[in-house]
Length: 310
Image (cartoon, rainbow, N blue to C red; front, side):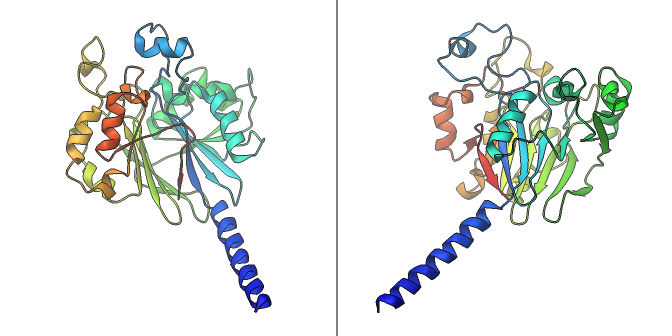
């Protein structure tokens, strides 16, 4: 009887080991930053929203960025090269317990300062990187090739530009795919895209910037229903948040997004995670009434080092 129990326990532990080992090899997305292009705190801001960070009462928050990791191959991809690239690369190395600086690629959403200027750290003045694959849409690719100092990264082969096409799947390996899709935004220098990341079991969309959902030719509700996680533009919480016409920097207010999706069941609403938060956005402060209201309504706010299994 004792031997039988021991054998049963041994088999159970063996099964548990294989389950844990399998889970440890699952690909995942990890959040490396949640703030808008200027970070948190933002340069020149001495208001209460940033003063607490300057005084170290609240934590610094890096610019919006995510990474895709495949533990089985050791591959790592970053989505958007932000001004906080050096901190985010180091964080990614710690998270993955891989001290190598090697990246399988960098995907760019568009040519606003918080989303591509981190490429400068790959140049000879800093890392002197070798042929890091950088995935970019046609106008974004031309912008990097034709304007210094980014063109020097191309000429010196610090980066290797890889063309993206709208709605064309890119197979990263046997179990991971990425699709870029256009979204309406202020496209002064490039297109703007969101990304759908497709794993063996789950799908995630990343849309850090869009003008307004109503300007898009896609249904936000359908998008949320068709994925497992939706990391959506949460730049501003509500109208009147900054002391200038907010039409100059159009984004869907968090309150607008919630209004569009509030009728969905909780199982759908909990897929929505707000990201790319302006320094004025109360969702950067977990103790704020607005943050608590978001959770009460069934929605989520991204936080650094949060991970999403695929």
